[in-house]
Image (cartoon, rainbow, N blue to C red):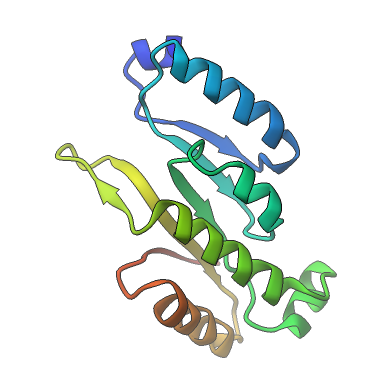
Length: 150
């Protein structure tokens, strides 16, 4: 990470990192003691354990989670998950609590905060409406969103 910082990268982006959370926390902690100052980005599905997220407080600077479904029926149909909505919403609230709304530096590069991704599913516009409604009401109308379509 320190070598990447020296080469001018904007952040360290951990993708689907949950199973490495303990290693990430230790490595980032040690690297910061040695001068790491660039943001740490946690790019995940959004179906996260809140207790693990709490252990990452002050380790992660930017969260990039998904909000895929606003109903457990859709979550089960497409992903085989029965409790997606509750787990996802609690996780997003915890991420928001930790890092707040997105802060962007003068160079236009994200420094801290949350960006929520949502994939618009064909024929399921209500899913998108409810997902965006949750973000607006429970996180903030100032939450940055990445909308994707197939």
